[in-house]
Length: 239
Length: 207
Image 1 (cartoon, each protein chain N blue to C red):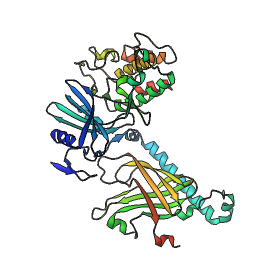
Image 2 (cartoon, helix red, strand yellow):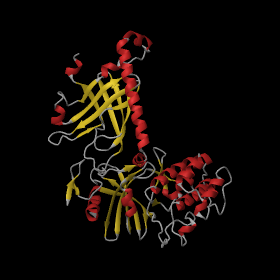
Image 3 (cartoon, rainbow over the protein chains, first blue to last red):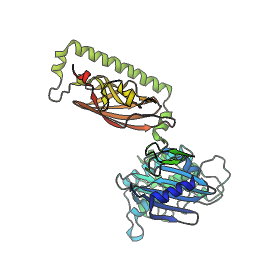
Image 4 (cartoon, each protein chain N blue to C red):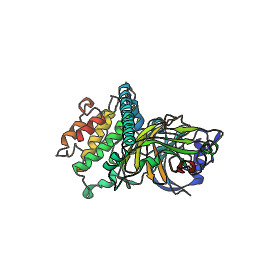
């Protein structure tokens, strides 16, 4: 099916732009030549188990996965195209940093908690929560969590995470170490991201001072047991 | 090896879950709704059933009161915005149907309004596939909330274990019904029409 799909994509779609191109992973935007509708095509090496699971799931805060196929060690995933800007682009950086108000951050993180609760309930950990992986859809202003490349199914008693996959700064300490990561790693990253949304800096560099400070601090506890235990619990604390 | 896309008819790979020609997804997805649905326990179902029974009882009571005291009821209604709901009671068919039996020949949809007042309507929606398959999706009798000329309803099972919400808009000579599925069972082979305008058959309007 991999080859069949590649062939049809070549015939029916035109290349729009490349979003990422590394030796392991390529993400491109394609547009249907007659329907003029866009899709995202991800090609990567390694297994696509998590995308196969997402293929049967739907949530307003994530793009719909349309197709998953494998050939030898290559995987190809087609995904709904979201028209909008990433949170990273919206925040800007350096002197052009546009900080967000606490209530805007609360609203966005509540939406993030909705999608995290949803995927966690299917034993999926995202493991790469960061502003680059959040898109705010242009028309609806809905938050969309993208890029499940780093996530894999959560297996209890899994001995250790062998390869480092997360983004430095956002990854929970246990993602570097010996203990296996669980859903609470996403809570950690959400906490770091909240701080970045408010200050433009990692909490270790400059912790936000305000109403959300306690919530951020609880998210980024080194011990997972001291954090919010579920995304729902984090959402409740924001209301 | 190959199958036909159910939307555009093009030949696609048998394992495809997305048609790259017409860009439609071919498999049904599990939404947040289904997760919630799993939490529906026996107690909740019992409460819903009891509520429905009470609603039916109230409906019958209201209908009886209206029949016995037509003038009395009329005087209490707001005459400016009053809608003659009783005119909508009956079976409404999609346009191509001229005889009730046509629905089983050429396929089509029907909306039945069993009873309706300014608060509650007892309805059912069905869509039949053309012969010889004649697959039927039907909500059976369900209750909808009436607001002016709009009936809002939720259906738990369309006969294929799929569920969703919908609205019926009362437009004098026609009604317009719209259905949005919130959960589609992966094994479902048929479903209700997404949106349609419905008409009363001449035989029914003559009286």
